[in-house]
Amino acid sequence: MSIWNIIEKKFGRSEKKLKVVKTFIKYGFSIKDGKIFCDKIKIPYMSIANACGVDRRTVKEVVKIISENSILKEFFEKIEPAGPFLKNVSRFLGYRCIIVEPFRDEPGIIASVSSVIASKNINIVQIIAEDPYLYENPKLYIIVEGKFPGEMINEIINLKNIRQVTTL
Image (cartoon, rainbow, N blue to C red; front, side):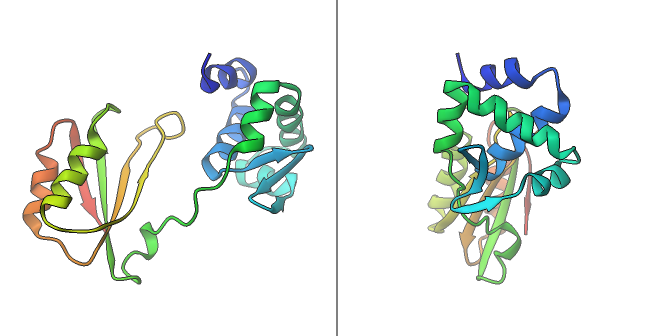
C-alpha cells in the first residue's frame, strides 16, 4: 500500500485534515515527538493552522494520528525540506526559469525537456517537479544559466505531452 493510500484512508474524509497533511509534505515538515519541524526549526501548531485556514486543534489531531500510525510516523520522521526554490529569484542570480505544463503526468517528461536544453549546451541549475498528488495542475520548473535561444522553447512545446511553456 502506498503512502498516498494510507493518507487517503486516514484523512480522506476530512478536507481540512488532508490539507494539513499535504502542507506537511509540500514543505517537507517532519513530525517528531508530537512536534512539527522544518529541518531543525520547530513550527508552532498555530502557524500551520493559520496557513491552512484551520483550527489549531485540527493540526494537533493530525499530528496525533500521524504519531499513532507506524508507517506515517516513520514517513514524517524522515521527510526533509528540499531547500530553496529559485523560481522567483532566478533573474537576480543571472538565471532563467522555464515553466513546463504537461497534459498529464507520465514518464519521460523531465528527460525529454532536459535533452532539448542540453542539446543547446545550456546548464541546468535546478529542476522542481510538482507532485500531481499535491497540485491540481502540476508544473515542471527548470532553472537554467544565462540566456537561451527562442527556438529552444519551440522545441520543448513540440515535445509529446507538453501543453504549455512559459519563462520568467
